[in-house]
Image (tube, rainbow, N blue to C red):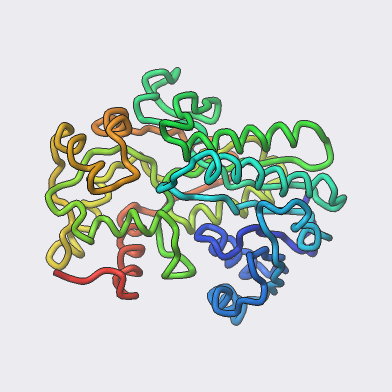
Length: 352
């Protein structure tokens, strides 16, 4: 059982998901040890500092570098629970090995090896990803019951095809390997699908903001696609972290995904509110047309990705988290509208 009087550490605290976790912890009265790249950068920390103004909890900032062994020592001191959210999430990369795989593995190793050296730590909750389970939608044909579950590992991604999912898969395997070599602290792995919803920082550089912005910036003005994916609200994901940290029986992997969705269903959630003012896609393009033109418009997309994902549903089984952690999910439209509105409110999208 985690002692609620001890501080709780959150890595990468300025991140999209981490911000919501920090808010939850502060609202619950915890002292948060927040690791950031520069604890003296008041501008970067202003959104987190605002969170504690009306919350019973307190936040302490610590400078730490994900790739620097030992840099988490001070922040982790005295903590029984660690939330490790810091991880590179970049799609447009020139050297996937150096920009994705090596940082993902090294960052995981540095945090968990520090847990080994910190005697107070009892549990580490890691923000993994659904892509460590499903690399492409086409992989669903190889699943036992036609859906992705926690028992499945991504075997279709590689350094050349879907390097980001490949890096997340290797990083998670690294985490389980390190945890398995000791018996003092346990590991809970959350595997969220695509995260949407309003962030603590409205100018976040998260890929989630970039993807939601695509629905209104004209990229899909001629039509979208039935690219299947799971979707979860960032606030529901933060709640999942909290429950994973403080539910004594929590163990292993949990798929955290509120909806089996696709681009067109996400667009349909926006149309009633924004259809008159923004070029929200209203129809799906034929797959061959997406295959031909989308890689030109979105450089991170390849034709192999389109072939293995468009017009193929993504179906994930979130029942373990619902059953064991009591997870619940808000409606897709609520998440999409509130995220889109945040982007509009801060001048990041203009009306027609």
